[in-house]
Image (cartoon, rainbow, N blue to C red; front, side, top):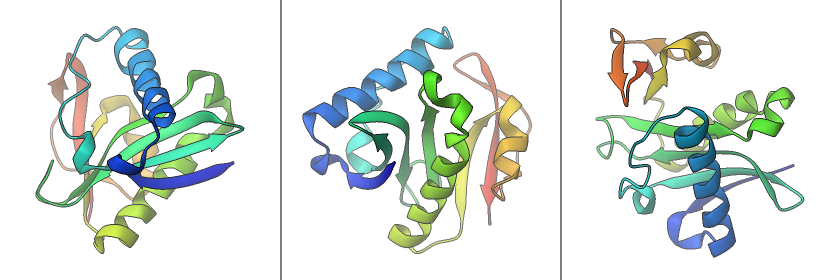
Length: 146
């Protein structure tokens, strides 16, 4: 298993296609949610990719403070459906948090988490900081590490 952190301009065409396909498969098709995944921010992010044998297993993107939130942030956290039994979500979030610390030199991180995943993110040190709100008709909460 390989974990890589890459800026947008270092993603290969194949890597970009795979990560966009995975995001489409889960966030739009599986979650039955019509929304604009291509939000114009991928070029501002560092991309966290977990792969094995040329297959993308998990993905997230991270941002410096001031782009999505006043703090650094993590988003588009996703594990391939066929790999969810491997507990890669924990590996991915740990890698994303470490990448924020290492690349942006900050401990403060904000996320918009699906409400049912609060316990998962709490295991990584995130604390819920908002009431439940709808994001693309899915209940979410804001969570932070301070």
